[in-house]
Image 1: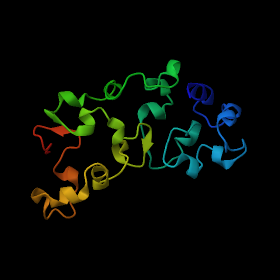
Image 2: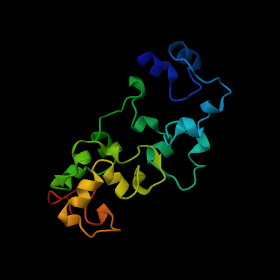
Image 3: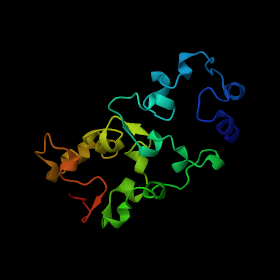
Length: 176
């Protein structure tokens, strides 16, 4: 697999002949499936966007290094594109260390899984959030369990973040 990553690069066009050795069904070079914006290939992932494609996406929030095409700010080109540092240290190279701000950290933050909630390249949502509103919380927290907690009775129409800080807080319930 390392050879595939080395010769496959980040572009669907680069290394196509090598990929055909290992995989069936590699699209022909003139195929729409190899176009960086082909919806059924990209399916929400921003890695394939190149050149002016980033600028042409109206309403998209773009992570600064990605917008500047500075892949080396996060990815190590000398190590088959692996990260220059694991999360959350990678994120804290530019962003404030949330472990110093809060006594209690939300699970994904404490575990260093920033990209569980935030897209590292671009998103339609503010703060590069992957899913908006309570649906992001309910991706990990079962909605039925949350709704059955007596503290959450009669909170229809409220967002989890109306009361809870998504990163951490001064108590174990990470209240705002």
